[in-house]
Length: 362
Image (cartoon, rainbow, N blue to C red; front, side):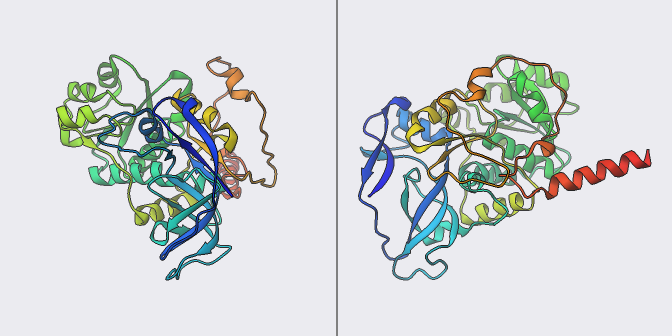
């Protein structure tokens, strides 16, 4: 038997349940994957709440989740690229948050060894949506782009892609995450009413693009003089229908491969905020819906231990107890704080060597 996350009616995280279902069988061209990790995304919550059901129709009981990483258990007729035991990353239209998932072969890639399971299982929606948005805008060093919810999974990746193209990035978030954003080269400002005015005060030139990953911010983009064709929104269908904003959407397996290669080469970083076990999926979505953590929240369907790291599952997570409590601290470079699960230490080692060389030269 397999276990999967499902819901039988629209609502908040409380409608989610973990049900036992027969282990699916791969059909022609399909691959059966044992899922190790699956990233959570705001669109999952929007669909589950019943936001715009005409846009995102569901049939109950409905499965949840798109992103996944895991190990191949079996393959269907005609599958040539994968065999039992292969480690893969990929996506499905729905139902990734299950112990066993049937995935079309065309939706899978080999997992780069440098990527942890948690990062690999969270890359598809956030990574390809951010990639498509930035590539579609064709950003250059002459551009200044505003990104709302910049500390989220999609936001921080879009900021890094934009910075790779040389663009100036102004990101909105709560003040306690300004340090987090600065580590990606983002000029941080508070979200909320008056965003356009705050952006004007810190921008060194005209704002030429606007990525609204928070929702409801296209009025601020208009106030900054950004044309609708360069305003992208993730979940705000009203902005698309009424203000001609462009809806951002996830990409294909080619885009996933590009994003995965950049992450494996440490050219971009996808911070993992927290990993929840399968039975705590409702708590995981509560954390996501509160937007209480920077980076990605991940469902760990099979907890994986790494050298130098232990996975704990306490009833109360430390960040819950300290959330919103400002504490004095020295500025921390995120590269120095990357846990072993995210990398092999080469980036931190290189930065340490560069710092020591600068100190000797000084």
